[in-house]
Image (cartoon, rainbow, N blue to C red; front, side, top):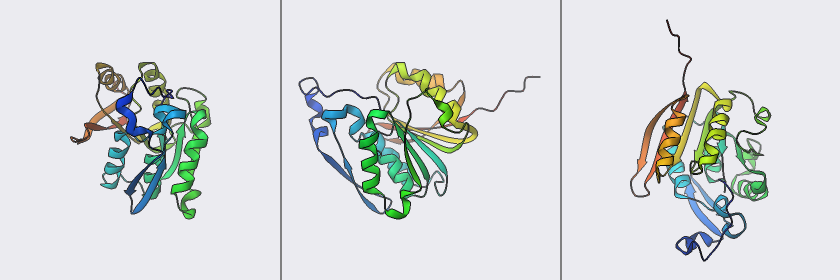
Length: 218
């Protein structure tokens, strides 16, 4: 998630997000996520897309056990934490300014035996991608990361770098504006994209994407 400063007078409807923590129960574990809206803005609160992604992961529609996985724009880290609890070998990423906050949530919510299977790492989309193995991940997760048009090109560049043709990409998002649909259309130039889940109550869609195979034109 991009870091947007909190201005109380501008967004009073989001006052519930000022809570210092949020509690969940996923993967047979109680999870308590620290939030810090005032300091880090949207990156430091749990949004509905993350909750729905965790619900979907618990359904078992995607294999997680021992899968080499990465979460983009992790924010509070809830999705990556749940994926790790379900058996994934996680790299949980966000921008540098969120690292301490993200690391604290991960450390506080993973048992000692899983700490070594999770890495928290800085990743700004489209930058220094050589720090991450090309086509090196089985699963890529992103919850509510599609909302700023300026990030669309570097996000797709990052996905193209991380994904092999066997990689599964899961994106959870609310379709708010035309630009959100525009991103899915952009992504479809390089990935096969399909909606696999919809939470009507929260109005959150989950899309599954896989890198297209090269065309063999005769």
